[in-house]
Image (cartoon, rainbow, N blue to C red; front, side, top):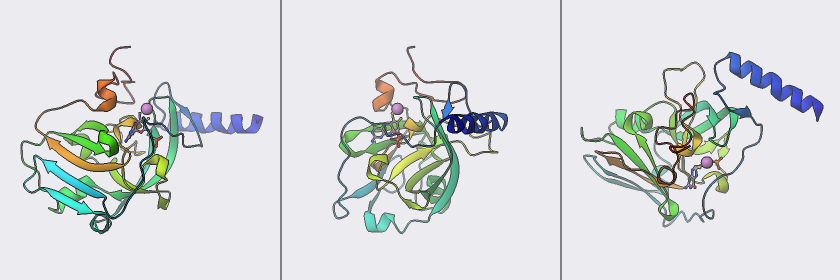
Length: 214
Ligand SMILES: Nc1nc2c(c(=O)[nH]1)N[C@H]1C(S)=C(S)[C@@H](COP(=O)(O)O)O[C@H]1N2
Ligand SMILES: [Mo]
């Protein structure tokens, strides 16, 4: 409808003025679903979350244990490489930064990159700095409700733009793995699933780092 188009244009204009709409992006009020392969079934009995690689002590949390980790809320705008953006999404979940600060996860000095390991062997790589930033969350909730199955239930990595924090690098949403089952801390970078397929390794939304070979 005409008024919907007008509202979107106004919101886009406002976000642009606030420095919240990266180049080539347009606003949506929906939440599109994008991934490779089927949506996995969740079994709370067999599900676990592993923390391994360059850590002092490996972890293997059951779903019950994972739910007891300290919770954090983060309000972010999310930006998809397919050119839609969604403003003011409220995520709840576990902050890796917080786990490290609390000594729940102790990293070795050699840890420099993180591989997110998801169901079916899907992987996404990010630098440690990105994984430890305030705008990366191991999210279980969106806008107060558990994440829906097609958006990654029960846990997904999510990365977005925190308004007023321009110093934080913002990556496209694909840098958050849905149906996340573990984090591997690595001394060197390795490419994840989409990165091997030609998606840009850095994925900075302001630099429009969408694909490696354009
Ligand atoms: N496990 C898994 N996570 C994934 C993907 C995938 O194929 N498998 N695709 C990524 C891509 S390309 C995008 S754009 C976002 C989309 O997240 P959404 O479906 O919640 O919008 O998920 C990312 N996480
Ligand atoms: Mo994507």
